Length: 141
Image (cartoon, rainbow, N blue to C red; front, side, top):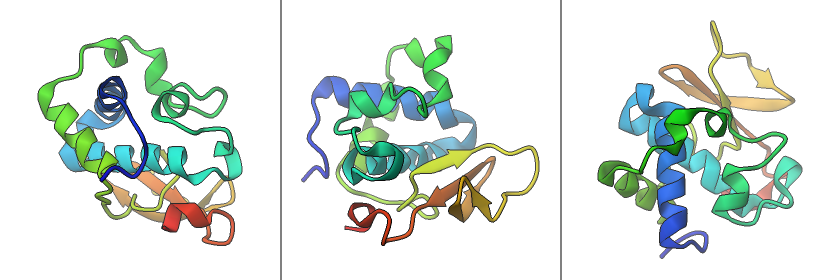
């Protein structure tokens, strides 16, 4: 069962985002980006109160994803990327992004906090950040 409602076009859109943001971090890195995106669409908290679906999450501005501004994002979704997107839409979660709402690629080590959110860990080049359960309970359900 899906954790958020979506269409087949949404699956492809999420797959393209995951690839464009984290292909260099491998499939696990792409899955973690997917977790972050799905968490934004299901959380209705903090910066994401009006983000209610995949399309709004992907194209959120300000505060959205840099990949949407680059040509690589606009390539057709590949079958293997679509399968990864289906996994996160089905609710599979991957540490350290299982509850993350943010991630970024620092030039050095991961700061303990980023925009007042706590670091939940790093996977290759990306650091992930999660809200508290008090600030964003839906992320933890």
